[in-house]
Image 1 (tube, one colour):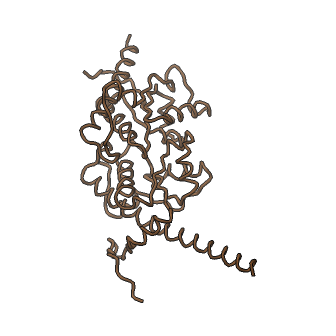
Image 2 (cartoon, rainbow over the protein chains, first blue to last red):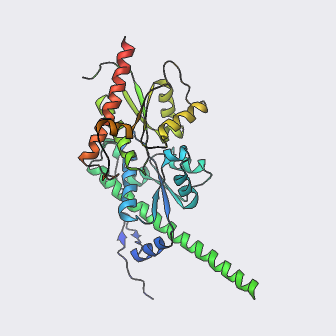
Image 3 (tube, chains in turn orange, red):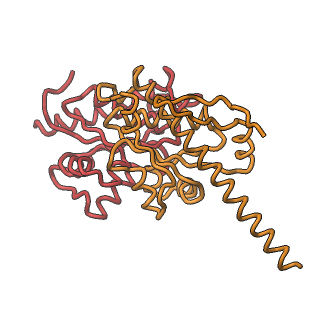
Length: 184
Length: 150
């Protein structure tokens, strides 16, 4: 069977980036499977602002039904909602520097992030340095960085969602097989 | 008018992402820093929470203003935890809180609201809240500097 091209794009390195079919994402969303984004929320540099904006693009435009935003300060004060997000869903930590605050936040609740994106390293591949950008409201370069980061986060979300759905399907089929053996 | 003093104050702001108000907290703190660049250092509550070395050093070196965005009052919560854990040691010079700003109270005081705003991009209405927060921070900083000068 030939799989229809769902609008794949070619990355800077010439590598084909596979875009997940929107119908598949909708089906996954209907099953209630979600991914939690745990971003660096640093205020001191523009890269923190770019990471934050990228998360908004993902959560509000690109993958709204399958994304939740993990709020780092809320985790500190034990906000139930955010703890549930981190403990129940696969987590993507999006870091602005090697101190890796997002990863540290997950570990505080005994969880290792399922994926980590280092925004500074990723943007360097595109020759983007946000050193001159304002951390207050992003300019053109910062906005471009946010969009690129958002696309990178989406790739990781789709990968994690599919792997989560496969995992759940495997568990379900194993339970069913076990049930039929016990019943027979 | 800007005070000429080089006295510094650390603003520890809510740097959450989920709630609409967290954008106001972040922008309000950074706007205040634009207005008093010589006097204000800004750190996010979570950055202090994970013991980021520069944030911990600044929090112990200068007095603090805490900005809380919503009911869990994360900036205050992180500060209390850090004091309890001995990471922040309040003294006469640094580590002590000289002011707290709770954004819903600022909105009431100035008759402003964030209703209908988007967390990713504020319109003029949201930016009025940002300016109100910044002016409250600046007021506290100027008062502190004036008191120290006496």
